[in-house]
Length: 101
Image (cartoon, rainbow, N blue to C red):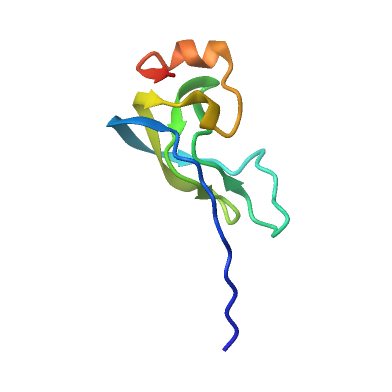
């Protein structure tokens, strides 16, 4: 039997245990494949509907084989420096119930 192991590090971006998530569909359009050939959208990525930010992805989602369901945080407190990318001010304004600390 052949077994491989991989260490995964995912910084926790939540500041508080109080948050609200809703299930949405993550599209695979525009997502680039990593070195393993997988299309992974990292947790904490801004999720948009109709070009408007509505929340942050709550967990990593693999869209290699097409769109997948994802939990989207629409309310809560986050540690901004632990997010995978800088959030634009317009997106922060649109996500009024998410507090960036």
